[in-house]
Image (cartoon, rainbow, N blue to C red; front, side):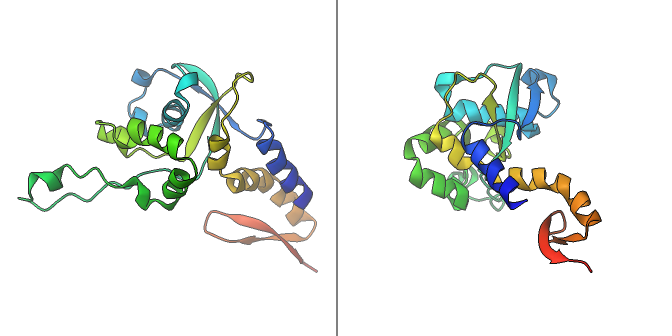
Length: 190
């Protein structure tokens, strides 16, 4: 299982897409709440970060989980607050993932900041950015800063979850680490 985990991580870092979720994303107008739809937000994030290879809707893509880049929505100011407090757009750098990305990839962060965090549409500005769409066109080189965002642990864990029932049947127990996550253990049930 440890070897499989290492193989999955190595494969993803070297362009293997078999562990990614496949998605067919329709036109934005076809969704009731497009900016809360994973495929739409994932494509918008790709387009913000890689504008030279912008994706047009509708499109087939690979959806990849990433470290969250969601900017927290600021609290509403008290009634009667000065106008300058009413237009507070929030600070994306309060999210440690965004801050780390901005420090390591300042040019890519500036694109993200302009296209998403400064967007005049609040639904876009504060949308959940927990996945990114990658094109299925293998001729498009994925920038290194995209691979830096990928949540490898999430991909590996979801792949290994398929083996937990088998491991459990031979006496290898899994241990719950959160209410939604369990991990393999090296403890054997005798």
